[in-house]
Amino acid sequence: MCDMTPKTLGRVAMLAKGLSVVLVVHFQGKASSIYKQLRQCVSESGDLKMAELCQNYPESIDFHLKRRLDMVVDAVKAAAMATLFILAGCNAIQSTTTLSERYRVCAKLPLSTSYRSAPPGPDFDLGTLRAEGLVVDVFIGGHPRFSHQVINKGVGATDGFKMLGRERSDEQDKVLFAYERGDEEGPIYVMFMAPNLDSVEPILRTEDMLVGCK
Image 1 (tube, rainbow, N blue to C red):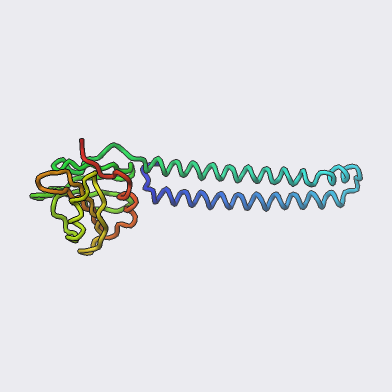
Image 2 (cartoon, rainbow, N blue to C red):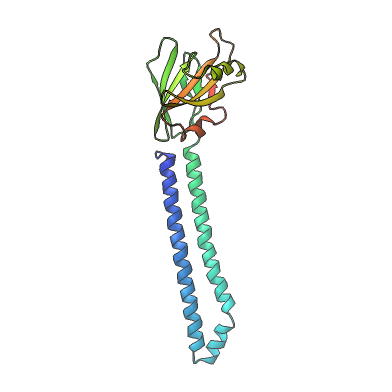
């Protein structure tokens, strides 16, 4: 099941929720119908002893009907919680993935994602991240195509990788990270690029998503 993307699992969860609501409404309607029939039967019964017995416990009958309805609701809640656990499990963090050996950059990514390195450039590494049905280009190096005002903030990222900002240029959404480790070439930058990064930004904002490789 974890081979499905979180989006697909979300659709499954919505379908399960819809079916549960239909079942609850059906059960409630059926219970109400049975209860009305029972009351009508009692009121028309010629057996005074049976009529008195049933009329003495209408609240008890109603209680049992409500109790059964509560059992259905509890089952629906349990199914919803199970779905959440499945979603959480499929988004669990996997073993650290190496994005760049040259720059010693690694990432903690959900199981539902994958990363593949691409042929590097003279002073930068490239790769592709597949997440949420998108292919995200990854740049790792010292000279990203990003606003200089934002790039200059990289010198202050001395406690690990820090997200510097998000912008749109070259018809791409871009998110830039930096880590100033004291290397001679300056801060290491990691830039994620795609036509639209909205669906993967929660992954990129995960705490300590980017780390230095040990």
